[in-house]
Image 1: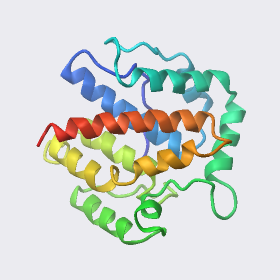
Image 2: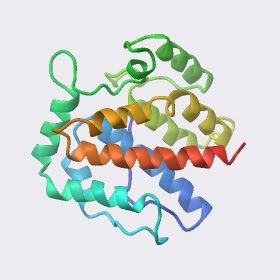
Image 3: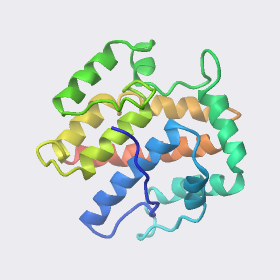
Length: 211
């Protein structure tokens, strides 16, 4: 698996098909934004993205507007520097992007081993070009994008999406959002955390309705 370009459409579709396409695109966007400092092309697309949802009062509209607004207010260089300050550098980063850190307090622990077992069951494997471990938030979002948009209906279905989300994302992603929100130097990524929180909440509510 590797991150693919996401087309930027306003959250909230007008049909079931539109909604599934939008979900896949948003997971793809999150994957790109968390994996590396965004490219100039991606930021240019984000800055001109439509910010009004098709339905008035849509839950994701305000956090989406905040994210697009942050992209418009900050330069490419400022966003890249923010990414490096928060997630890069030598030694311990300011904010960890790995599920194992939040679930066990350590990297490369049992949560990662369980994830690899589940990925193998789904027929998925980490792309050799990807430097991060599979429990990186970008990788998990890319897996969700695949489970929504992939063609293999035996794997890419709502049950698989719900199980993967409930096991490998939902238990810790809000802690990541809290960690980013607590960083005084985070501007673009604080807005991204707010959008991530809202999107994950919508996903959780949708999956709960399947029970």
